[in-house]
Amino acid sequence: MAKTVYVGMSGGVDSSVTAALLKQQGYNVVGVYMKNWSQDLPGFSCPWKEDYQDAKRVAVQLDIPFKMFDFEAGYRQKVVDYMLDGYRSGITPNPDIMCNQEVKFKLFLDASLEDGADMIATGHYARIKDGRLLTGLDDNKDQSYFLYRVTEAALQKTLMPIGDYRKPAVRELATELGLATADKKDSQGICFVGKVGIKDFLLHELGPQPEGAVVDQFGRTIGSHDGAIFYTIGQRHGLNIGGGLPYYVVDKDMAKNEVYVTTDLQDDRLWRKQIELRQLHDINGGLQDGQKLKVRTRYRAELVDCRFQIEDEKAWLHLDSDIRAITPGQSAVLYDGDHCLGGGIVV
Image 1 (cartoon, rainbow, N blue to C red):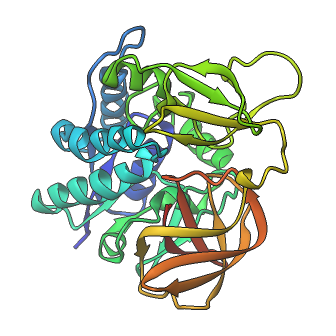
Image 2: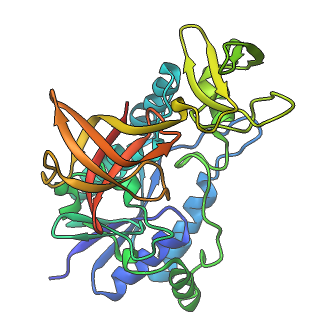
């Protein structure tokens, strides 16, 4: 008997083609729209109704059942509050990674299985083999970086069919099938919130922040900022410091409400050769002390050779070459060839 697969349909082309491919492969496909956020923000209207309608249109075209799961409360608690707490503490969290961990591969998976699904499917550019997470075939679109906190148990219950395709081929498939979302642009911005920028979102949620000093590498106050939470290590733009060489953010002190900058690209504070990780996640239990791996410290960043080490019950990465602008709160994701082993949050 054919397995029943609940496909997370966001109203975009990737999840639309995912549903179409699985139907072609003989699964009993059910489309599900996850309602994670519906609130409009000043100057930005949340696109959830439009996305819901687009997903529903594709489900009608494919002649599959369609449902909506409301995860707004869980999304607010697990993703938004996590993100806001992170910014308040001075780090730069990644809400997309937390959304995958807590919403798509926990709330959605559990709700789908409870509702009668055998498996779930998503439109991610990654591959799954025997409970292992592999990179997507399209290096330019590979999303394994955002998926590294998913559990092996969840992967065993998940399909990601477009991981075997390149993005242009997915668009072509959508056009050939006449799907309503074939020409729809990829979404930008925070996870499900739409096109709103992170600073606008933080201002809306946390309100205006106290101004403070911008201090250069010589200890001189050279300007003021409109809230230390808005600044990220390595940031160059939006500092409002005129004249001369560009300045880069190298550190910040939340207690003093100061942001530290430098014009020196070789400043030691901009580069790191060791990374401490917290909340280490080992997908398949394969991480070993002394193991030589590759690490990616932000989405689409180059892979860098490293050695994984456990010292005093802490996880460390010793890099073969210095990496610039390692950002506390972001994720360092570990690879052995095309196998994503897991990773952790940068300290």
